[in-house]
Length: 317
Ligand code: HSE
Image (cartoon, rainbow, N blue to C red; front, side):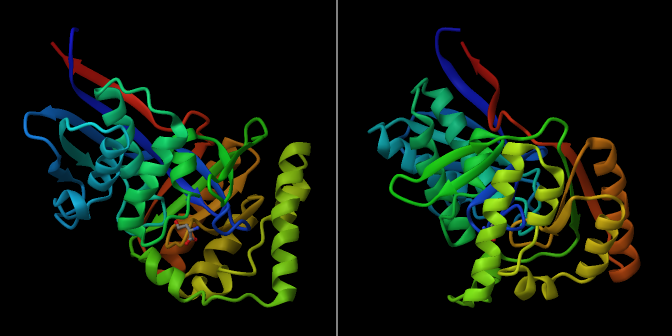
């Protein structure tokens, strides 16, 4: 192949917060995810030619589209006037709490970087994806984009540049994520949090974030389990999810280490010691959504995806 003319990239679903680490922890799932195909075009600039899997709800205008903006920022960053056409294939639900905006933005920058054989540093790709996500989610917290790009369970310490730390994932650790068929817009779920936290809750929360990190390093399942408590966002956001308490109780009863919202919800996330438990937990959570709130749902059971976004196919002549 002498010249690449298109590239297709995948970026996975992610669980923001990992219950106790609001805006600072995120982990990647094996599936589902979004795909973006990037193609060379003659005219300069970025166009979005097609979006699938969105019921025609995502804007095609590049500067209003998370993938389009991320690609625009990347081209500007590398001073390229190459024209790019993007196709976005949504595998992630809209406003589902699975990091859909971040996945589209990350898949776009991975596809464009590969198409142009640009070899851009991952930190720069993350910066570009974050600009795209800001369009979709209203804020550029990196707890979805960083694990979507790098994989694993990532600690994000905000800063310029941010510190990104891959936390150890004990062998076998698995997740059950259940997406009920309702939507919560992240920007609204952030607005209801207000801008202050009572000191006593802050103490509980930062002790839990520290304890989760220590538990992961020590592979101490009991400490991990005790750390998976959110006293900051969950009390304010959980009323938005019908059946929340029943689903959480069902997950814990079925053997989860902890259970809470995935990102800003409505999806709910349970961390488990192994895949077998996670399968059982996912089924129990789905049943609880159906019984307690008459909500149909999808369950995604997966180990932590350690690889993150990837190029799936390259074409050319
Ligand atoms: N940390 C973000 C929030 C994640 O909870 O608002 C959104 O997916």
